[in-house]
Length: 328
Ligand code: TYM
Image (cartoon, rainbow, N blue to C red; front, side):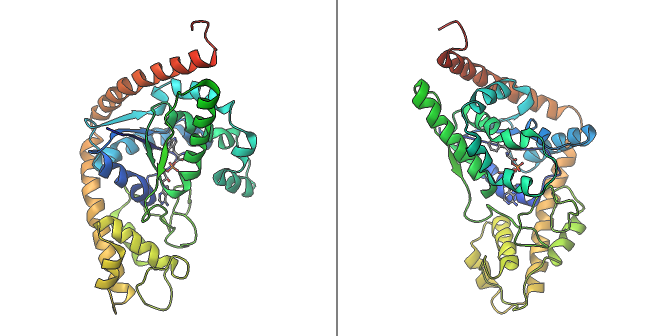
């Protein structure tokens, strides 16, 4: 069985972008792959979050993974900070990654351009992300488009390490869906839907009030020609909604376009709002059941036991190869 690994950081409330670009694909892959899905909470330290909020985001994220359909008996679900080996391997790999390579990462450049004061973690985190990935030797890493560059960096690090110290890491492949890999902001469809969007008007949150989310679909920015067609460049708003529709219904964009020939945006949006509302209702109901009691603690304990076992062995192997331990 081929291996797959991915993670989401609990820096904010889970968005429809996370759901469509990451969680839904994870669920669809779980029967075919040996899967490792984690909560990238070490990565969440790259921005300041109130401790109380971080704890809530973390718990919600694990609950949402399960509410969305991930089965903890099929998938190894774990919390990154439970596996101390990530930070240690991250250090070794960080020592091998070029400053230039880190400096050309789009996410880092975007943050830098905003001119806010930023911590060194934002610069360094792709080396930790390389460790997250390479630790488990996955063949595939399903991510949204914005994370592809970081997976490619992990590939380069793995190749460099294997060349220098002999074959150690599987070279991972990023897996990005052609549809849904980059869900855009509903108010500004030229920018990515993001949990860091403070006003949140263009962003749908999975656990938000469903009526609010439906309204956000109804008031999504489109264009004035009124034709439902897919054209990311010239009609980014309606194309984004078509992608959302396509993923939520598992239908092709062409099929949906054919259905709405000659129909106005209002009708299309209303249908999409309904479809989204139903999906969110199902998830939220399951979430309410899961969040109670100690079930999530048990899931994380079970996941950590499996992940730790792999991580310990891998780190020991790496440490033997690089010569940091005196045992050969
Ligand atoms: P994060 O937490 O920003 O995003 C989690 C996943 O959601 C995808 N995503 C989107 N997909 C489509 N449209 C959007 N608007 C959208 N917004 C987010 C992201 O591409 C990602 O797949 N560094 C990573 C977390 C991480 C990780 C890893 C991922 C840490 N270590 C190892 C994979 C493997 C991050 O910040 O993702």
